[in-house]
Image 1 (tube, rainbow, N blue to C red):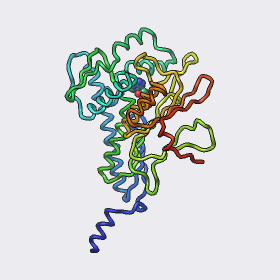
Image 2: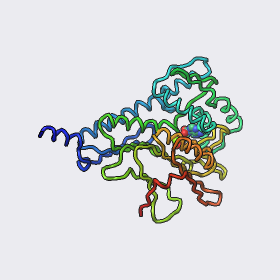
Image 3: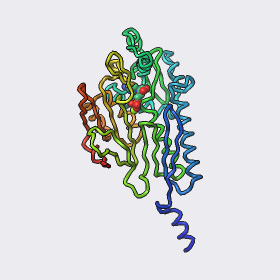
Image 4: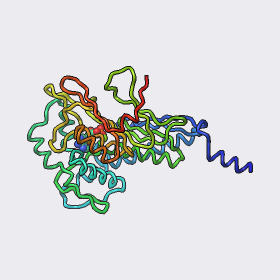
Length: 329
Ligand code: AMP
Ligand code: MG
């Protein structure tokens, strides 16, 4: 009887016995943050370490900066007429990318890299990409040139390059969360700058509080209160280059090759981090009308704030978005 009670109390550890632990490490070019609740410091540390190790493994596969990443090796095979066998992880993310490309009519496209490179240079030099360079990039972009079959990929056009900057962080926070679960940790938050995956809520709370942009400029601040989902924020409100008085975003419309010029900020709550990440970028490109429709199609909630020419803030959201929000003074 005693033993049974002991075992039970171990299994059903009261949530007040849990402590909060927080870890941070630069990964994938951004600070990765892991917040978790555990009853044991050693387990918390081992779990966080394993989660970071998983992210580092994913970075070696999906980075577009590291020349020897699996992603860049695949890029170099483009135009060779050969299909390349992929790791399970890259297959999963490219398949998802293809799904979001189709669903968004090409607004989301992991083959957008040649354009992104041009706009990265434009940011550095504060100079528009030339018409010729945009024209040259055009032939190298397009998800219909990425053929995925039986765990392999063939890039049909020569000199294609892939960029998972709009989807890999969400996948990585999902994977890190999975690793924490293997250590028995379910109450967790893994965040990679604007992309995050949330597990069960902190003890005694309804959910994790994620601060939102306050378009109303009231003295209260809106917070999402959410759990077991992904949240992503995307947009050019904070990351842009100004050339001749026009602001160009780091997000490019793959259909025109031009960096977005509307000033907007999109936040998505979706079933997981990868979905939220890809949707937030897609909605940034599509704008509120088509964008929010896309969110609904994936059962997600989304909000977009646009700043018009005269500085007016225009807020649009799916019906359920504000139901997840609490205003705190
Ligand atoms: P995010 O911050 O998640 O919106 O992702 C933005 C990053 O995704 C950019 O820095 C580019 O690396 C990449 N990217 C830009 N435009 C697109 C697009 N239309 N589709 C997919 N990826 C994009
Ligand atoms: Mg994204």
